[in-house]
Length: 237
Image (cartoon, rainbow, N blue to C red; front, top):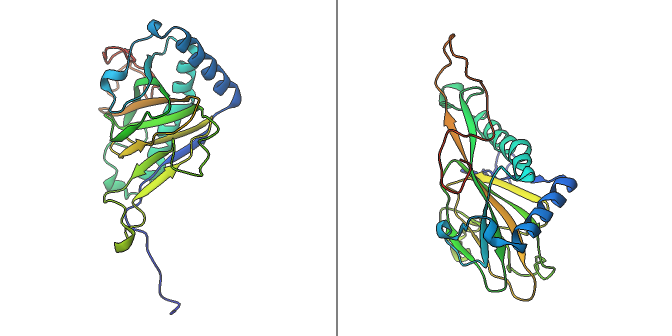
């Protein structure tokens, strides 16, 4: 092949992956146990979800591990995604997404409990960013099949006969792995067979453009992780 020949990858989509600190993971696992021991103590989140899962419970910043997760992990991860992607654009094409031009605000966090046969069909989220943190995974979800895996979908259906090969990406859930992606990114969760429960935390974040600060303004600048100024029933209000 000629040395000047190259194959280019068009239109990449960006997925951030991070490994959670073991201590925070343990605290969140204990919180999940606490919530599941008394599900009625937290709001039901199933009304806004697309799938058929055993249990979904809304979690708020009054839980210290959730507040810590949002402030020290989720919001910085979204900031990292923005800087990685936006800083690749020419300055005149970055819109309001330059440093100091926006703030990141948590919308909500909820606990998903998936049991055998449960699934989440292809769907998207509201806001700017969405993500998932895996807390517990049954041993039979091990990558030998698609069971229980998180799947990201491309703009067209996968079809090997016409070489549409890069249209799905499967993620094997592992406790402590966290993923952040744009809220518009279609994704789904396959069912699994056998005993046990698959626990995950899902979340939504919005990036809010900020007007230029006036000299007389006394409001804080930069990004904030939790906001009390956006009412949202059952969420981070």
